[in-house]
Length: 613
Image (cartoon, rainbow, N blue to C red; front, side, top):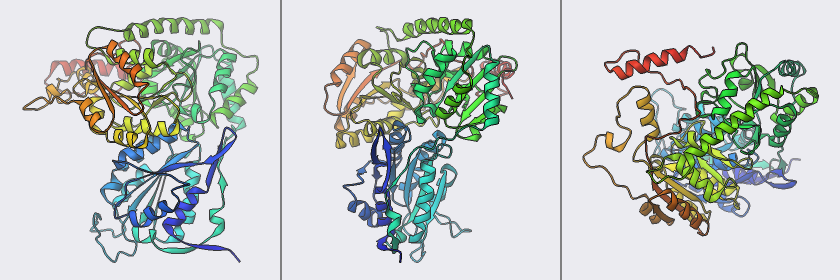
């Protein structure tokens, strides 16, 4: 007879989570790093009580904003190379829908997070409950249906026994290299409190280890043939290199076969910055070295990349006649993009399989020499824009100061605005994972919460968050959470008084300076926001600096701080690094009364001719 234990659905969920394990560096550890929770009437009585019972095994972290707590959970998973992850639970209503943006972020970036929003009453007796969304034509609809398009797996738990198959499917998705992404289990609030006789076997400990799909023989043949025929091959390293823990394999493969490597935002840090074959960033925010080689390449081996438009220069970067793309990816959807030769496999397994077949083959020495010379030129250009200045500094000057003060051993965190482009070009990443950029969804407000998640994953690491004043204003509440939890961050706020990146894009497409910088927006009085005072009010050590030299000193002083530090510096909104880069497809109006827009349209139409279909 099957042994059972009587628990509420919420208690069963919490207990199940404590029994899921993984192995990292030979040590068995819980796969769930904890649960971020903001309680309300949709989850406090049911799941809140259940989390209290397992608080010693599964830590619960209180946050200040549902979206930002989910960002922190997602950042934890990214910093853990998807080997571990977290959950986030909210009440019904706005608490739940606040997490939809975070779900979209995780969906785009293929990152695991378990979202557990409270939901309506399954029995519908008290309908409409507080915060319930009512559809006049569909009685099954709730606000949580907004999660459906941005979840890899969605389920609504309307009976307590449904949690058994739902959690099994959830764990499969959260740990799958191809389907990895957010899972949403909407928890009806009455069902959270209902009891059921669960089989004890449901709570047996399970260890989840990475699945490493091997390549198909025919696809491997085609990939090997393409590379053996290549005269000018390049490798694009995407996030899949890091998630597969394939950095050393990639390094050895590139060295053995003389193939220059260029990195996406997700893949940056796959190779150390100073490796001679690391050409740096690629695409719209690419280095001059990477983009020079990409334009000439006859074979592009894309490893673990979804080939986003910033990587491919809106598919206008690869200019060689007959260029072939070999898509080494665990997800078939990505592997075959733009008629590429798919090589569906785990990144590390795929590189190992290619290595076994390519023994003795190497790209021409002249190609490697071209790459190394291009890198020398790029490093000179990068140094020129990051060296100290006495003028109002640019983003690049700030990046240079952070590197000089804290070094490439730190983990830098960023997400949106102009900084991602500058960091992609200029940050000198050391170890794998030391560059943490959320640029798949480019979510303003991710930065500080993301830094908290990184710090939870790397408690002994030096975590530095860079963000603009716009992102700071969007979401800053987790400064207080980091102080409360004793998780020290160093946060650098670049105040250019507006959305400087979009203002530059507006100008580049012929538009007028309008509604981006504060001075160009409708106003009666220009705000003078004291970011340092605001951060200090949340418990951080706060400093306002007036120059790059002062910034470097403040960054060194902040190393000795025992809690989160916030350093604020004024920057120029109009300057960005001109070296490197590539065209980006941003549609310009066909018709305008403004001559500048018409001129920009003509340039846009000329650029479109270079796109691959």
